[in-house]
Length: 437
Image (cartoon, rainbow, N blue to C red):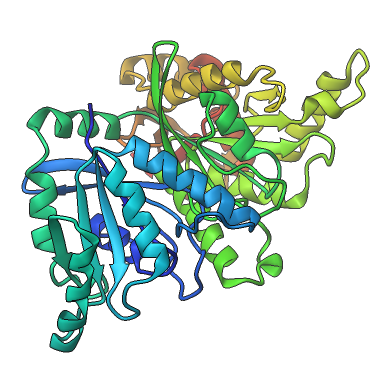
């Protein structure tokens, strides 16, 4: 099994800063306001040739009445259960608190190795103050500063000494799996879909838009299918982003698209498609991602014989010119057709990987060119001699011809449609380039 370490502690001790430091990227949102991290955040890091997972959690406040703090406490407990080892973080600047005490009591009852990390130890005075944390009774204690990174090497050495080679290899294998990002506006049911798919409370689901602030990765292995699901914060129009945190969330969601192979775009069936949905769609197209459109909350729509057909036709009209996308009507709450959505996403992933041999390509496309000749340019006839697929992640094709700059958009669309017709590229943007022969 893969090795996982969870970072836990009370709010605002610097857990997310350490998480970012270990991952060497800004994955978790860091702010001076307590309670920024709400869900469990997953990442991967390696040290001395050992690879392991790291979980960042929200600040732990036991017995709180606050709706989010209650949820966070539940999430922290799940992270502690999921992990093989725990980094328990405290803050030398504020000293020991009751919350640290109750967290320590909880961890001492468990059987897992605990690394007590005293953060913000960045001068000799702080080092003296930090010695009070020995009274918490943990053997492995480390003094570090997660902002500057001093002292993190010793902590990583101690963690990697617990890991066997096999654990590390399994995580690397997961990194090569297909990645599906669940994207869409706030409150369309992204987290509900994720929880229905994996059958457990993996993310906090709430009707408050903006509950999911970070992107969340879930390894999925059910029904002989393996991939990684990425749940993202809802993407809103820039004018609606008042709070700094939400601004970060939008960036994270867009970054999640960068990481994904296929985007599952959720649309609210009751509200219908909006300009913002179209923005998200065209962003995914520009990034060359596979796309599956999921119309969620279909159980709330009053339906007649052709409702779904007409709805789909309207969607595809709005998506034009790229309308070769699968559209599925689902209900995340009722679990209607959600597993079908994953099957289609895997098909789209295959389509995005498709490589067509140059001989097949030329045989098909030369026939298409013969049956509809390119228009004449300034008295010269446009001749396309040769077609080849380029070695890129997004299916891209180069057409070699005598006047590459003069090929007009309608003819490009014609060639793209022929490519789609003959070689299945459903749900995948196709790029066409014209080059001098």
